Image 1: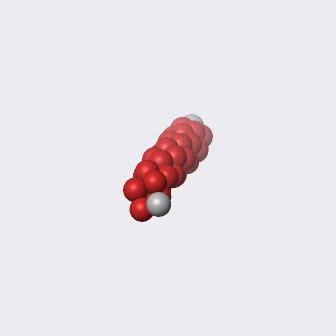
Image 2 (image 1 turned 135 degrees about the vertical axis):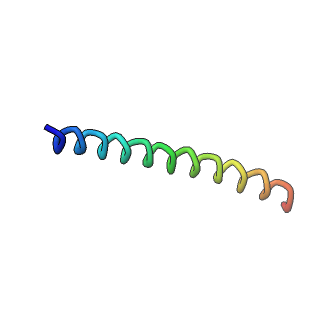
Length: 40
């Protein structure tokens, strides 16, 4: 049973990590757009 539990938490961690990366990418894109407006 602990193995299955570990598997679940691992996939949960992967999901959190992926959503964190997605959020970071969205924020980074916003920053780039803002900086682009300033310099253009």
